[in-house]
Length: 249
Ligand SMILES: Nc1ncnc2c1ncn2[C@@H]1O[C@H](COP(=O)(O)OP(=O)(O)OP(=O)(O)O)[C@@H](O)[C@H]1O
Image (spheres, rainbow, N blue to C red):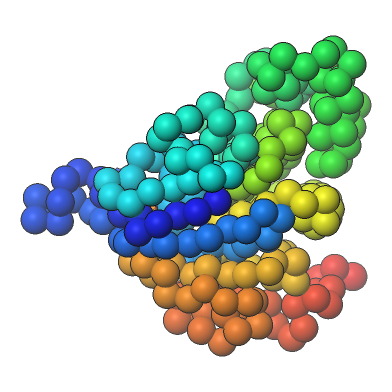
């Protein structure tokens, strides 16, 4: 994914009382890289990642996925870039877990056998194996988050973008999701995680992009970024980030 000099505004220009959420950002996300987008509330993280598949249309600049500008082929961008939203309620389309996770693969026109394989693998990856017939309305917040992640995994996208994916997850679920993200990266899928809290993904990431007021304040490997990140008001792990945290038991 390539982001070139992208600016996104809400509500007109600054003079008109509008907000510049993303301000002249350039960023390359090579295939298979694991990137963290960090930064304080309102620094532009969500707006920036939503340009990756055309959910937000930049006011200036260009975004390309696999060499194709997003605005010229939205379907290609949305197939290549899977997105898990901050509030999973925004993305459910079916009443049951299995039907919801199957929805995307069905739209790709895959065979029943392939759809079943993907649904099973995706639910397994988020510790929800065998829960196909559960009603989404009956799930806890953490379970809903995991179903939303499974829905994106089942699309087997080239890049997976997750906006604050750990909110509301208990420790086993967080570990399961992080393990799956690690595996995806090993398999060559690009992973972008938007987060305030770097603890879970710090040891996995190749790179941390820190935003401040819509601009890239730092773009560096995790160890280097950690030194600069306190100024960005994000929580970073103490000690060796690759080591388990004390709370891991
Ligand atoms: N739909 C919208 N309409 C108007 N302003 C918006 C809208 N979405 C975001 N903004 C503003 O744009 C700026 C960047 O918001 P954005 O949600 O991209 O930041 P963020 O870093 O993801 O924040 P958070 O961590 O709180 O989710 C903020 O000032 C926010 O208030």
